[in-house]
Image: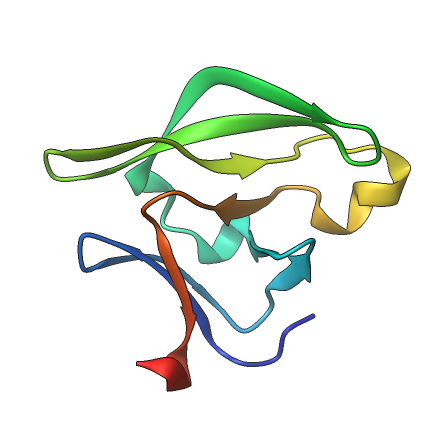
Length: 102
C-alpha cells in the first residue's frame, strides 16, 4: 500500500485522492471510498486479465468533458487479484500524481 497522498485529476478537478492506494503493474488503484464516483459513468467495455480476471470500465466526465473508458475496476477478481477488489484505476488523460509532486 502507498502511504502518501495520491491524487487523480481530470480537467483540473480531483476525481480521486487517497493515502491507501495500491500500485500494481504501473497502475495506481484507489479504494472506491476515495473516488468521487459521481464523475464516473459505467460503460459496456470489459477486458480480461489472466490473473486478475474481468475488469469493467467507466467514462470520466467533468462538466461537458468526457474521457472514454479511462477508469477500470475489478469487482470480483480472481484470487490473485483480490487485493484490488473494488478499487479503481485510471489512464488515458487522467493525471495521477503524488501530492508532493504538484
